[in-house]
Image 1 (cartoon, rainbow, N blue to C red):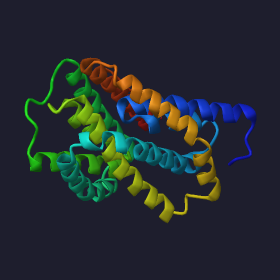
Image 2: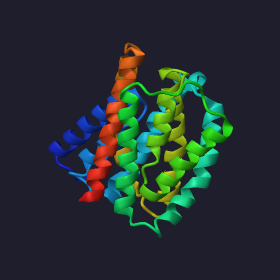
Image 3: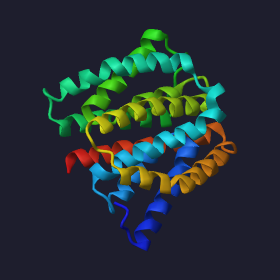
Image 4: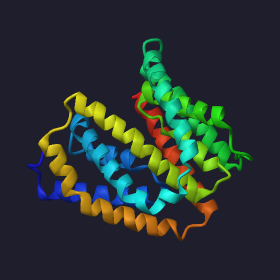
Length: 246
């Protein structure tokens, strides 16, 4: 994996740095960008475990600065729902072909994101059952399509708690899900020494990108931040639809 040309190293460094900026601003989006850009260099089975390591490193680096802003109560109930919902989504794969299911899920995300762009938001935070239900939905979607983030992103983005709390909670939530996914990859034998070496070699551009993105976030108005995140979410959903069709 590490016998790369100068231009390949340059491409990887620029990709990780740029995706790190987006991650620092929005709290998510790193995996989407790096997966698309780095699959020009690596096959999916090689690069996905490395991306998970970068995601975990970014979240751990973020956590000391956003720890107090995380909505830990909501995060706990979301996690309960996610753990229950994930096997349900895997079971659903035996009933519905993954392509059409992925297209339906991402199509729903597009509709919800467009509604929020038009100003639809939650007036009150849902109770425990409602939050666990969102986690259940996210877990089911994750089990069925490996893309369970959008329901949780929409939940935190529409929460009356504010952008800083939503962003911090997303970072903590994805730390949990990425760690869980990494353990599964480890169990499947997808990690190698070169995976860890490549991940370690990009920690500096990753850290610089996240730090720059975090600095930009502190100077963005909340309304503009939400619009940026919704547009990024739309990009994720549309990419998922195109991927499921082709």
